[in-house]
Amino acid sequence: MSVHTSDSEFWLFGYGSLIWKPPPHFDRRIPGYVTGYVRRFWQSSQDHRGTPEAPGRVVTLIERSFWETLDDHHTSESDKVWGTAYRIQADKVAEVREYLDIREINGYTIHYTPFFPSDGSDHISTLVYIGTPDNDQFMGPQDPQKLAEHIYRSVGPSGPNMDYLLSLEVALGGLSSESGDEHIKDLANRVRMIERADSDKSHTTDQAIDHKLKRIGSTDEQEETEK
Ligand code: BEZ
Image (cartoon, rainbow, N blue to C red; front, top):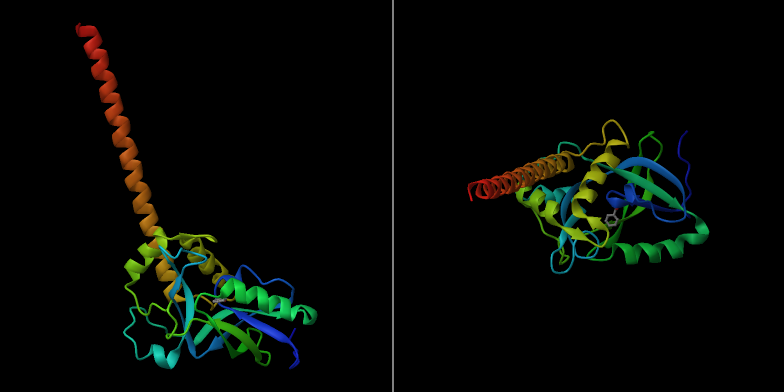
């Protein structure tokens, strides 16, 4: 089924948590992509996936022409940033915009960009929140391993930063066979490796404590028999 829209409709493009946490009062939801941007975990989060004392990291969109001037560790072969467009019920637009402004403040500003539905229908004008390079929370390029470690450690009122990353990876995988994002996949793989190493370490520590307790127990026993 192709997507028919009219100019009076309000459409919102989600490329981060909106993909798996939809806004209220939407009556249509379609997968697709925008072009001319690169998605990166370069926005600091003090209100959702971190705190003012220990900010986490969330995604923003970087204009591709600007991104090309930067020294990034990850490449970006595709010009498409995949996500979800939501049409908001006409009588709820003001309410939803207020909700989104509250939910998404922290450096993001409102922009409009054409969205291309995955079924090849005509593009739709969508509103999108972007943390541009001039906002205080914009971090710019970061070493992927350090970034993954940072995400692994961070927690905020909306939950662990790591859950945001892994949920985004899963949500992107569900949009289309070509909607994977190398930057997201690489960070998710790194975070899983850090988690595994951490759990191996605590397993080893548990075993060491167990071993020590057994030794203490056996020494007590020996002392008991030797007396
Ligand atoms: C989103 O697409 O989930 C989103 C990203 C940044 C700000 C607001 C929404």
